[in-house]
Image (cartoon, rainbow, N blue to C red; front, side, top):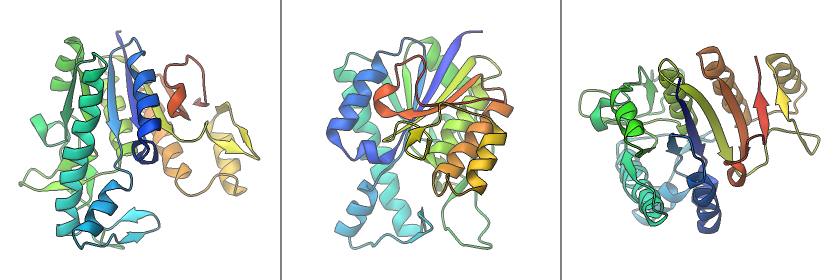
Length: 253
């Protein structure tokens, strides 16, 4: 099967112009067909404050009320997404900016308000790979914003790591897929050192011991879920090492 890489870049890199440029220069050097999924960073929060809408977070996750949904749709689907596409075009790389609503690529359902009402947050129901496959076959790079839709005319805020894992899993039936979750660190850290390879047993041990906490836990959960769903390779690595053959933390069965 033809190889495809699904690469997710975190919001803290997007917030930093120099880091974003470093990542995109490395990204375009990846020869295989690829999909880019991006986070939103704190840009939406800053824009909301300028509009008089204060961010409301619980355990690092954004409460997306109706006003906040308008802000993140504008910022994630517009400002951030099109900025990345324009930078890729400047690097002589054809790209198309998309949300989950475009071409019905990622339908989702609004999350149950119990036990916490996160508002207009979406849980992915499926990924329609037809158009993604067509873009990939035409050597165009789909750039996906962290937005889905509910089929009833409503946009939904959806975690970018979840989108990347779901897209990689869905494409794995037709491609040899690799998932890379890229961010500002070198990989999964333990006592100041990068864990170069991790299986479920080691993950559970490090989580139970408190070495792995907070936002790294859902990243690893999604990574192992992707492996189980047919993705061939999964790694968590630095934004600057996206083109390297072996880097960061490789997840194994």
